[in-house]
Image: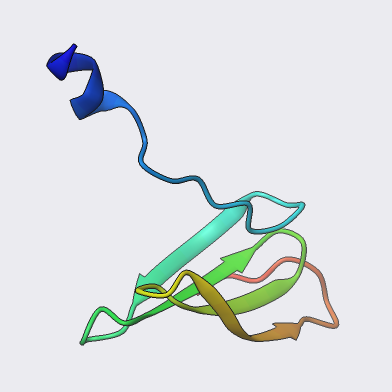
Length: 64
């Protein structure tokens, strides 16, 4: 059914153990930065769906 295809996800990302607090794309839409309640900042190459860098907070969850 074509109407169901429009609503079904084409991919799913598992990013971390905590909820996502904020995310932002780079101006060229290649990189995706995600900060979450588990205290990590993660940077992904969005086009390749690859984690390219991460940093851990000393003080818990991060906010932008």
